[in-house]
Structure formats: structure tokens, C-alpha cells
Image (cartoon, rainbow, N blue to C red):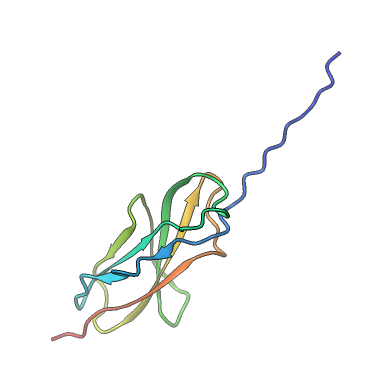
Length: 116
């Protein structure tokens, strides 16, 4: 007779966020666009899986209204068609084999230039 052992595997969401690219956090700013840059976390102890991609969200700076979202393999994202002289916040999350964790975003503030 078989003893019927069951192996359970729990894959946890990442417990850490990406890190800000200290050299160039925001680039290519115009009155209607900008790019944000980040890097993988240096301390991977709470990564809880293999890093696959990054999830990003663009929200208004003083609101939680989601304006754009997406997934990328890159460590940057470009946003176009924005309102001039407006402050935004970009939230970036790690996407691992355990999923993504909405409790651990990297928050990058970015502002478009005024209209000239």
C-alpha cells in the first residue's frame, strides 16, 4: 500500500519592490510625456520566486485614479499624451513566479513640463 504523501508548494508574492534608478529616475520630459527608470532590487531575499517582468501603473499625483497600466521586460516605461504641467505618480511592481504584490510598489513622482 502507498502512504499517499502530498507535497504542498506555496509560492509567495514578492515582498520587495524594484529600486529607483538613482542616476536617471525620470528622463525625456516634455509638456506631454516622460520616461521613468528603475532597476531590480539589490537585496533579493524577499523576491520569493524568479523575476519575470515589471508591472507599472500611472496615476494622478493626488489621486488613486488609474490612468494607464502595463507589463514590461524593460527597466523603464515611457508615457505619452499627458497633460502639460501636471504631476503624476508611477508605481512599479515586481512580477515573479509568485505573481505581483500590490503592497510593495516603487513610487516614482514625475511631472510634465509646462506649455511653452
